Image (cartoon, rainbow, N blue to C red; front, side, top):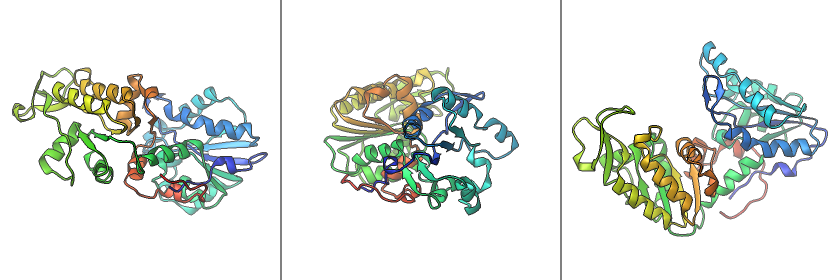
Length: 354
């Protein structure tokens, strides 16, 4: 497994360091709803400051701004304020949302040069953006001596374990609504897994179109609702008995029990995607059951993907699994076996077997 060289290899004393972090945090009314990604960047930032960097300049994108209204709504100020609360140091500075500049997503050489101007080193700690060929990820890494931050390296190592020799049984759990984004991961990992459990909207896709080349476990029952609403009339029924026009919004109790039993016996687990509309309490039981089983298993367990990460965090179980990935789409592409351009742009460090 290829690892980029670590920030620990850099001489940072008296130097100005540009850090690409992943501060793409959820906002609610202009307030940060979850600061997990900000906290995840702290070890790298603290290390740079503790080792004498004269200035640490942090950049990140936030959301997908498209117009002037978005520029006001997605300004980096709340993130910068939260970072100053967590890590007060006058040498720390946060740049404005990189996606306010059109050169960011275009990987424009002029924009990358602006970011690099006056900097001595570049540290990429934004694994969640490592699959993007952007100015602040791949572009600037070509202009400065570049290194990987602690979070970036940890993501590579933990996710990389799923691609090597794993303890068995290896159980893969997939759910959620973004079916197309996950089919390639299912194909790449699913053939290596001992069992693949599929819930959420993905189960319907697999049941109807059968796009996978290996056997998988699909729900035998669901919690169906008359309409897509938190207070809709609902009942648990077999998958072949869903009333016409009703919607399956969670796996049913029979399926939840079966999935939980399989997961508790696993030795390696990767979970991506909820089992239903877990944001609504009436349709959260399946996701809760899976989360509790993953957390209680005597297994190397990795949770990835925004919704499943949110679920296990809100249930207070994040500390009971081996690794909670902040990577989102990057973790999926990595587990497809793709080379991520933000990582490839950093010179290689230590190589290790998966």
